[in-house]
Image (cartoon, rainbow, N blue to C red; front, side, top):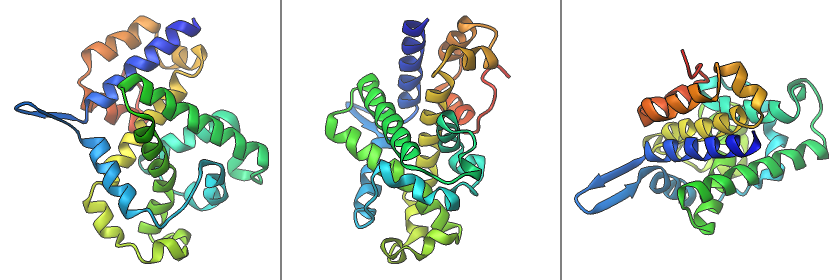
Length: 215
């Protein structure tokens, strides 16, 4: 069943990716990657590695499901009680290792270069902290964020990219173990049917908002 889960996960990654592909004439654009590249430039003064993400968890976990639902699913997958306990070094390593695996496998599934995977990973680990600052949260006091025009970042696609990251992270968590798939579907064939029949943009929205894939 592990092979089947891996195959299903890759299909889901590709479906998410296809939601952001636009073709005009002979030009094919990956709008997600284009927006993430722009955000990467805007956020270059804010340095944060995956290992250090959880030090902001107390602040960012107050954001709603539509803001960071995928991140909450990921953290809960290795420590369900983290929201009420002290973050330790083991938790930081687990987050970093899971985060790195997710974006490496996503990149392999959709054909990103190593450099592109690094940019997607780097921006994604920063966005919840930026969202907290945008909503006037504690993170707005971070020196690296004080000089940012957060409204401009929203106009440049910050909200859309949060949806992208939530979709990928939730899909990873759903396909992490067979039991999770069983909880969300009658069988694997139902999930495959969704992958085939549901339009990409709808698939992304369903995942980002943690809706049941089968209604």
